[in-house]
Each structure stands twice: as C-alpha cells, then as structure tokens.
Image (cartoon, rainbow, N blue to C red; front, side, top):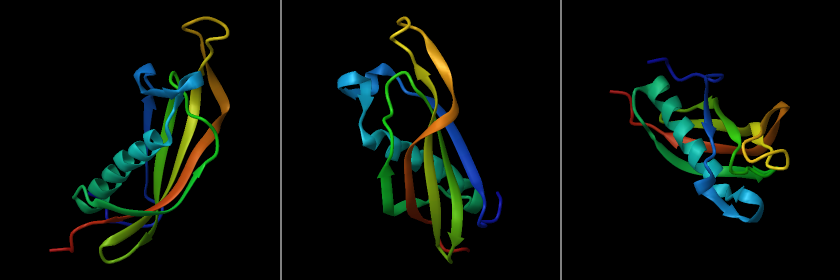
Length: 130
C-alpha cells in the first residue's frame, strides 16, 4: 500500500470488444468509459488506502472523441487532492489503437499520438483511518 498523495497515477489498457458496440459505426456508449474510470479508481484506492473505496461523484465529464469497438483504450486516474476520507481524481481515456475495417476485417493501427476520447474529474471516498 502506498500512502494517498497527489500525483499517484494508475493506468489500465483494455481492448473494446465488438459486443460493446451500441450505435452505428460500431460506436460504444459513453457509459463504457465511465465504467473503465470506476475500475481504475478502484485500483487507486487499493494502492493508496488498502480499500476499494466508493465512487461518490463526477464534477465534470467531457466526451471529446468516439470510442469504437475494436479500439484499444488506455485509461488513467491521477490523484489531484487528498482529504481525510475523500480523494479527487482526474481521469483520461485515450484511444491508443484503432481497428481499420476499411483495409480489412482484422486490420488495425497504433495511433500516434493517441486520441483523447473522454476526460473527467471525480471524487472517491475511503474508510476513515483506523
């Protein structure tokens, strides 16, 4: 366990399966990214406080670019503020690889630079120190 401190960052990567396509053009709904933010926030709480914590709120969510089935998404959470029981986190979801069905059914490419798809600020709470 690492003590909760500003600057602590956790990053996850995930392939977006075609089963998650929700709209035309294989678009994934915005809730997909929010679910990933919850997963990375849980690891932040475990690393910083030895507890899974609870997600309390979002104060800002910005959908900046689409996430599609076939993408590889990198999601990060960085602690920006530490209270007695609350932690403020900055989230970013970036598309680092994208399927290229225009080339072939299985074609894909690495995006350099990655595309920032979703950003957010959120608050998690953890139990009071024992």
